[in-house]
Image 1 (tube, rainbow, N blue to C red):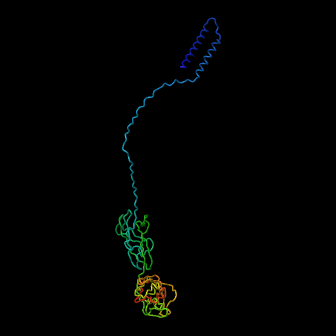
Image 2 (image 1 turned 90 degrees about the vertical axis):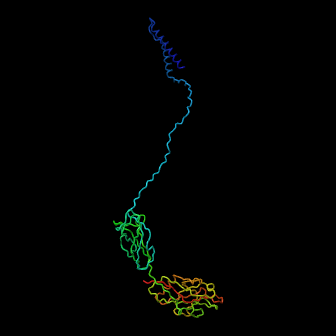
Image 3 (image 1 turned 45 degrees about the vertical axis):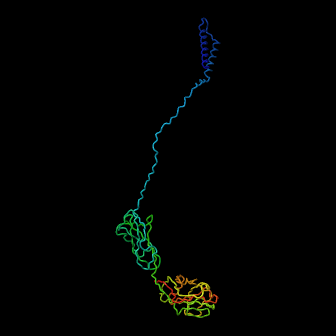
Length: 383
């Protein structure tokens, strides 16, 4: 409204000024002269117009409006399909099976550490499975790889027929045990028709083997003690033909002596085992309670006499029995092997038996009285 009034007022002033100017110009006889008042008025009007044009126009007041009522929200139906579950598709990678592969199944003959005698012929048989993709035929060979060949061939035909993948076959080779006692092992592989050698194991490069122990052919003999050379010697110097060991009621100690003829054993024999069979005996008193354990020693005495009684603390014990039951049992002892081996090449092997304690001082007989036969069971071999 203010802007409208101001506009009309300005227009009115302009009209008045224009009229006055026209009137002044149209009076006859008057020379036009500058009208100071009109000029001033015109300048004033112009200045006001300029001032009015420079004022910032105010926007008209906003017209109040009533917001539209809220519209109800209607859910737009959405078409929903079935839920899709991702399906995992497994991809099978085909692994190529090598042409030539073999798996050991079992030893058909001669399992590891089979004992054979020197020079014994034998046939080793392995059961193998063809786990490759190629069929074996007569062009395939069993070949010696390394170790002890044991008289076997450098190579031989693997099979006279065919062995398809997955099948098993028994592969054999004829061998001979070496002549010297020892442990022997030989390794073998298979060779295909093109000369490629393969074996067992994941990489197909492990040889399969045969392993034996060569034990010499042995001889076992029984040696019976010689009654005329066996007996006992007492601490008082008495020599008796009975084989008694212990002490008497008079506290006299007795030691037993046994003699064996070993002349039948070859001089070049190697003793592998000695067993004692001394089960022929009886007891007086309580020798194992009163005198302790009964010990056995090597004692080369020749002909028995009083000087063979051993006084003091002996060394070099071969066997110790601490009960009657222990004597009755067959006793196998390595120390006896060493002692007898030292006498091979001579005619006699002789022993002394004595208790740990010489006398019991109880005025009783404490004795083990051996009868006959007393035996040594000896096993040996010769070259």
